[in-house]
Length: 498
Ligand code: NDP
Image (cartoon, rainbow, N blue to C red; front, side):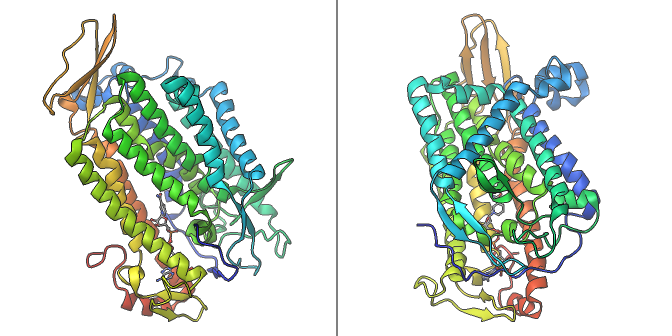
């Protein structure tokens, strides 16, 4: 069962503080650069010409026309990246998500203490909402197989779905920024500004988020906590729906589902469902207690997570690599170890903070701080200050390894090619009777790693940066007590190393 949120959870808030993410220049680079990275990953690793596209492999002969052909650049140029029809359907998906949150029953919990002293109420029913959505998809797939329109729609309109979500992220961040100016001191709705979100620099505040817990009330649907909604619902569930889409596409193309595809989809589904099952734990996480809601979270939740985290499944939908028993065992070991560290450390802290007399944590050592909160110094939290991040990072390997030494080329011909036999030249053929498509590794072998292992590198950077931010937050909150704590628990993320 998910841990019961306690009335006694208290998160004291830091005073307003300066820039993170290298201030306004960093905010600008991230806000423009990350959407571009999402498009680059989509276009440069595709099912039209290869992963990476052949022209990227031979830059000396690169021409714009050839590149446009390789990436499948729309005939109507940049306008082809959007579609009214797709946008309407994506908005329909968001609406369904809001309706499920509003109307399905859910546990109502009290959040952490706000700077104003009050506590907000949260309704948690992401699990049942997801089960409802999955049940519809499962019924549709049982009836129509891989041709179930949800899967074909997502696959065929992938780029336009990205664009819609990018636009929603920009629009939502802008709306929330403007609306945050209506937060007045002592308001009875308990609205407040995030400690780091009102520096006065418009771009930076828009990016990092001014308001801590923006909520809107919609007719018939009631109050929605925008940050909590975006953190848990459309994007995280979208990630899994994308994985299912790619699995369906692999089946539709080749008539089978590989162990690699099965593993990746199962791992990522487990990861997401785990966060839905433990939904109330979100109330003590940094995103909810400390960060405002701006472009950083909107884009991260709605675009970055679903579209970049599902890149491995997208890759395997085109190049259906089989791992075999030993490959599968290796990947499972990495996942099992990572998940064990990640889940048990997070549970330990959550139990300690919500019910310290729980027999599973009652024996752990801790230090008292002047702020009133206690800090664990034994168990998982005695090994490193963010041992949970280490577990999460190990899991990241399990997501990427199933793509093997990635990279493929897509070749079309009117004559059916013979399929390769050895691992190095293993090729897959589909299509016919007049046009055959062969997917083989060839000269692309190894270069696809840039896309399919990107997650490991990115996630390491994210976790290291997040740890530094959390460290700063804790230093501001605990002062000398935090210094005392870091002398006892010396390592940041990896015991004995970092
Ligand atoms: P944590 O769950 O690690 O929480 C950090 C907070 O815990 C600190 O600010 C402090 O808050 C409290 N704390 C720190 N040390 C101790 C201690 N020794 N004893 C008790 N409490 C302590 O932070 P996150 O929200 O960053 O991460 C939660 C999980 O989510 C992690 O497993 C992480 O890997 C995962 N995650 C995944 C992401 C993804 O994209 N997949 C992105 C980000 C996170 P307080 O003020 O209450 O003392």
